[in-house]
Amino acid sequence: MFSVLLLAIFLVSSRTGKSQIIPVFVDSVKTHAAIHFEASFFDFGTVVRGKSIVKIYQFVNTGTDSLRIKEVKVTCGCTIPTYPKIPIAPGSTGAVTITFNTTGKSGRQLKVIRVVANTDPEETILQMSGEIKGKKKKP
Image 1 (cartoon, rainbow, N blue to C red):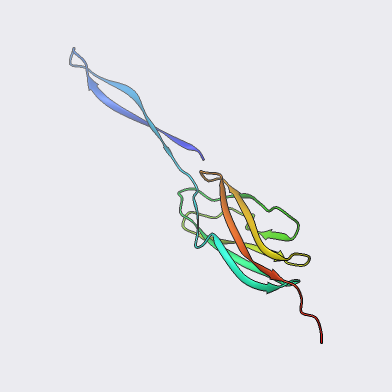
Image 2: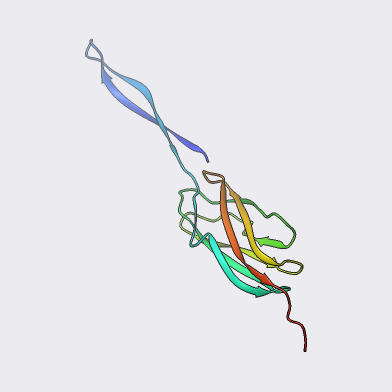
């Protein structure tokens, strides 16, 4: 974020009737990026172990400055994030894509994804959850 300093100059009459210029600093105008996801939670239901789950989390920059995603943090190598590396202009849209490989997983799973950007707060949480069942045995 950055601030723009505005300088206002006002003419003020002195006691002697002469005008003088007095600089007055006005509070800075702040711009910021803001990320708004259409949905931050995804329930992928019940899947068979070994399937890859792909979820696209759509977002819009609702702020007044360009949005820059610094990184997307995940908790294990089974979850792969893809996200824009270029700034997203105010009012523009983008997406964070998460691919979750269920190989070696079983039972109820909850994946927490942390999107770190030039927003306030800096971190936005996304989640995906579901049940993973073992592969069916061949007859």
